[in-house]
Image 1 (spheres, rainbow, N blue to C red):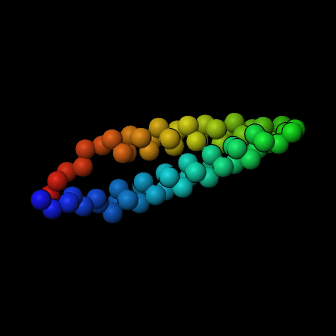
Image 2 (cartoon, helix red, strand yellow):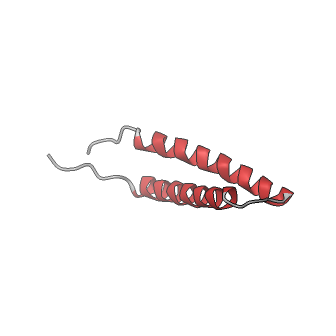
Length: 70
């Protein structure tokens, strides 16, 4: 049985979503650890949390897709 190859498009999408998710998660952790935030930083923190949540959900969806066997 030969292993299934993942299409290059899937790999590109997965790598992009993974990097955006990790970057936004890191930004959210960094901003959340600050003692005080101004209004602009609070907006960036909220956006980073939303992007991290969306990215995590998307990654789980990508990992659960059925890949065709050639």
